Amino acid sequence: MKKLIPFFLFSIFIFTDAGAQLTQSNFISVVTPQYMCSGGSTRLPYVYRASVTGLLPNTKYRYYSQACRYTDFGSGNSGAGNPIFINGSNFRYTTSTSLSTPGGYDSLTTDSQGNYTGWFGFVHSGNARFTAGNYVYPSITLDSVGSGSTFRRYALNDSILVLQFADSANAISGTGLYGISLATAKNIVTLYDNVNNTGRPLAMAIVESEGIDASAMPSLVPYYVDSVDARNGRWGTVIPNLLSTGVRRINVHRLADATIASFNTDADGIWPSGVSTVNPSGGSATPVRLTQQDIQLSVSNTGMNPDGFRLEQNFPNPFNPSTTIGFAIASSGTVRIRLFNTLGKEVSVLVSEEMQTGTYEVRFDASGLNSGVYFYTLDFSGNNGAIYSESRKLILAK
Image 1: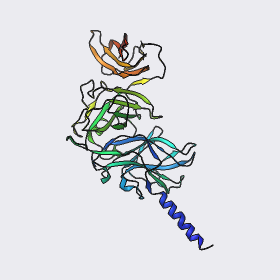
Image 2 (image 1 turned 30 degrees about the vertical axis):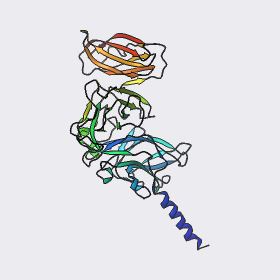
Image 3 (image 1 turned 90 degrees about the horizontal axis):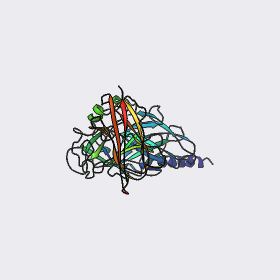
């Protein structure tokens, strides 16, 4: 019997060690960006949504997230990069990963099937894994039911291509892009190369302000620090320089459940302000800048089935500085909602995109306008030939 004990202990050691090796399993992408960037002094935050499967039901696990390469598979190394923990509406960043030291991990709780679906994030570092041209796989490291000892290392089933900030036109060069919008802080933005929301997004970003002190994130790319960080409704990312379609759709996903809260589309990737996202060449020094004229990101589907076309009176009215306008379209087609002053001059475009049948709301911020009476007009051109137009008056009282 004594001879069996060492063998039994050795068997446990072998099983535990094998379980802690990095495998590409049990970590399934829900939505993951195609691209990220490289550079020790041009870092960006990244976010993706994924499911962890095959764990004990209704159980809490400690974890941290990083990114690895295929060469890490089968090893006891989870990769590199610094985690962004997203726990409910709380965002936290760390440069030190540890399943046993408070601050080095966060926790997730599985459902009755032993699965968990949520948002995960990381910031790339100067590690060689993040060399332009490499493909990296987001990874998750889990402990053994709160023990603090490594239990499983999983790599995502989707990879991300690393780009370098540059003005050259090649497959591994990218340009910064940031948006100024009315999107709700802490929600998630996805960018697509088509208006139909199909395929994987080009990029994903967190809407500021997420509550993380940028001084804790060393070496963020300058345009993010100067024009994005801690500014409500702003977000920043990177897109490839070889992008003949341009960015044609931008979604905002609710943090709570990933449903689309609002979106804007553009049929050719050249947005209403004249800014082009087609084959950019600005690198990190000259990022693409989309404004509220391009992407208010404030149109939301209320989920109600329309019984016809209508444009509702804005509420509140009078207002200062923001108001909400409801409208319904009874068929799919092109929707334009524009604002005019009393002289008939167009002063703002609130909506200009292809939309499906539904009832919607658009939030309008008039901070840049003078007090006075304005008129807003809904013009609809349906794919089935339907045409509808209606106007209403609003009052801005500052």
